[in-house]
Length: 215
Image 1 (cartoon, helix red, strand yellow):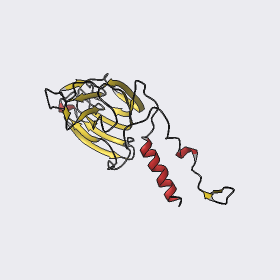
Image 2: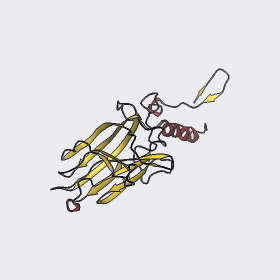
Image 3: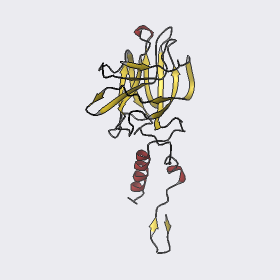
Image 4: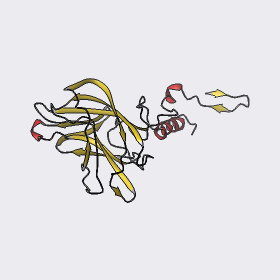
């Protein structure tokens, strides 16, 4: 605690508590670390499975899921869905998507894929944009990314457009066992270093101030 020249007290917020707030490259995804026991209600996305995911859980280390060789589906994966409007985007915007992955993947997999319904089909997989196949494994946390232009053929429902992102799993001659954390979705064509959404960072600081008795 410090005192100014009027004798008023102020709590000190350390630099490490401010490092996650920045200008530019703003992460639009709330609660994006995926490192929790259950998805917080403040998130602006939903988690979902594609095809045959036989295990999925949130943990303090990230989202963990598995697919089996026997599922026979190249695209089997966990992922997230969101509406572009909820993240402050619109049709035609370039968005940079990135996340950290660790674990093993099926010998046949579609990588980091994006899907959406179309005006002609309500199926969320009506249009699929496959990513580069993942290698056999990422032994350590590895950041992957891709740039995507939001197309004009996304099906509109109640004035919103929904996108689906799947992190990758697959099948083949080996099972997939995947961990995901620190997802970032930002506007533009450059993927910047991960930082939580400013709203989440601000909530952390407010919680810290409250704990110190300054809120």
